[in-house]
Image (cartoon, rainbow, N blue to C red; front, side, top):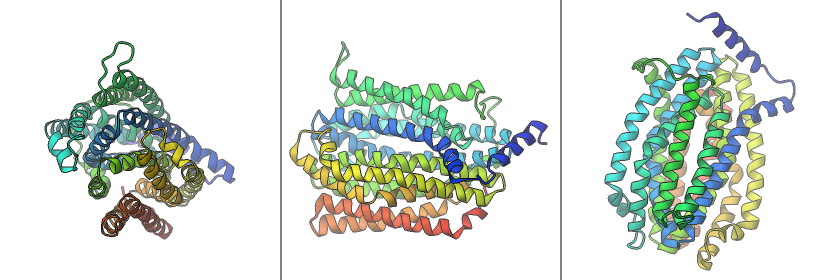
Length: 462
């Protein structure tokens, strides 16, 4: 039975989702959610860039080692990302409906599964590090560095996946500030750790590439501790208390919503692995330029991902409050704001790509190749932002199949197949591979936009 306080919470939620009287009010409400996520994404992105810049000073082989390691790690994260999508959607609906007890139980169910899976993936990553990197096509100068990096990263994998789960739960409840604060502390620690352990400053050992991995692992442990404190303290909508008992019905809801996203992530990461193997066949210099481009590309993801988080939460809570038209308005306003930000970033990549590349390396060939791919990246920013944000809205509604469909078509038909045709068959190498990536983003944007405009996502069940 729902108590009096729950009904009051539900009434408050419904009032909060009343149609705003002006676009400025809507903008303010979107930015209240997207703002902290945008700050968090910006910091994470800049830290990742700083990480790669520091590693880049060790040479092209070091860049290639980190890049080739990250791709299989991202692939292994597919199941966790999917579970987080289901967790966010279920919690957002529960909060929108005033069912805080269901939201808390959903967090517990997700954490139980994530801890078990996290330990398993960590062990496998450590044991089979060499096999994975050989499969990725690592050359002899890259392999030893990659193995040491991957083993250290795998050792702290469970901290990363639990932090991801807690972040997804808090965002579903509308709390984007706590993940922002935790990740700010963790990422500042990462930069400091990189400086100390990569270069051996202030009496610390000079570890090079393994030092970067150790600094990242320590930072993930810090984020884990800080996020765990948030949900244990009871100062959030979510409170980690009570016994951890299996709730099959609720866990099945989370998995059912997240399963298409799991398949989507496998399709996406599998395509990216194949894509990177194609690029790796052109040698260490090309893979170094590609990895710098991908690292900078993560900066371009920043506004799309931040506003996608807001779209997921707002759409999920809007539908949970029984107001689908308002949920649609939130998604449209979120897309508009995200597109403005991504348009500004497009100009930066197109006009200043060469100078950004020079932050990473002194190698003139790597700089030249990177500048070209950044111009390509700049041209597809509006499409990339659109597919991120509207896909986030669809996931918040529980309509997770269409992001899967768009990813399957975009990644495998365009990024991999067209990229291979242009890069290998037509001899365009890195430029051809990145042109395939650009067409992938455009194709996904078209598919997601058409699905959103159909309005069928409003009928999805969670």
